Length: 592
Image (tube, rainbow, N blue to C red; front, side, top):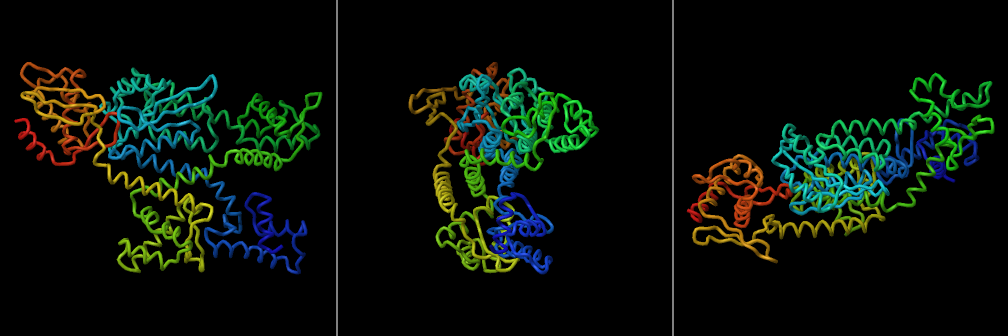
């Protein structure tokens, strides 16, 4: 075998990071290479083989330098980073989209992905008047479901008027959900907190959801543990802390497993030649770690299980450690590998596809350059040189000359380095350590990349052609009929709503006042401003029973192109497309 083959063979078998010195010692001990005259030179040669491979082949290298003089196989590093990369991406998306009040659907999709990451079956509903995500936890007799409603705010705080409590209740009954959760950057408190408790709605802050996700990566929650998040209405911050503390109590024995195995071994080497629950619990280091005798007993029983079989008990109730700590670690690795083999599609490729598609859909420079320039070139030509990429950047108007195109390409390369999922898909060579060349798509992912670009192209075309036609209003036409305004709703089974001109003018004025003071306006916002007001002499606004008149005003403004739906569904919200002054002139002309 060559030095490279030897290094790869040993790293593959050991499944861990190793130094050139350690690899050399194993290779000599197992006669994988001939004994050298100069051991130091042999170590240097093996080091150089791995280091040069890493430097020259970039992200397609066999070896990865993970520390000073320490190397690992790239495939092992990628596997270890995969889950961490997915978490980092989820956290970034949650932190960014929670403030995007102009595009709340991004937050909803991220919430779906976050709860899927925790192990829930999720369904993105995405229709006006309904909650955003339906969660299901299928755990036998203890199964449960929850409606999750995402709320965004560029101010960073959700107010009472942004939550349609009646719709939340209606949709809970419709889906037969056990719980209702509203997720947002923060909540106003006061009346909002009271209303949440009265309506049995949980208020979950985005930062608290992120803490749950981080804890889940440390050691996965089961769905029964997570049920507690949904059981106490109102602000859930304290509940989140409690759930995490209980989870750490349940899983902390794993943090002390190495200590326990070492103490078992120490007792066996002593004059006792065995260990018991009492002798192990009395050890100074065990007591310092805070482990109780019952926890020690549970760990011993776990290690005695037929699956692990690291501990045996004799007829006198004495325990014996019958394998090494390294072998116990190896058993856990084999269990993990066997489970991953059962569910390959649910893990790596589906995660990679999701991360790549979400990234390419971003309306930012680098995702656009990769989406429109780099990936199409690689699909068309196979391997693409720097010169070809730079010329295409200029042709598409992304750079004015070759110098600027070079800077753009440098930015693209840095982004590839910064994202593990891009590194996995996009490969390149390093003719020199500081230069990347011959960009290409990894052969196994070429079909996936083509499918994603096709999907993105269809999505963007569809959005471009239909965005102006997407209405939230149920009304499809309207007219002024004598002294009333009449609007027709639902084309399938049409019906009319009418409102007197005098009263409609008053509602419309209040609607325009709301748009003057707020970026987003909903029927609830206007209804709150109308409460107890006399809009015409001796005639007060009657609250919910007359809310349809506000819906009429907003619907007509939307049909006429003066306002547009923000995408927010609970409550349905709008923003201006044209200046208020232009709407006021139109209103005088139409309604007097």
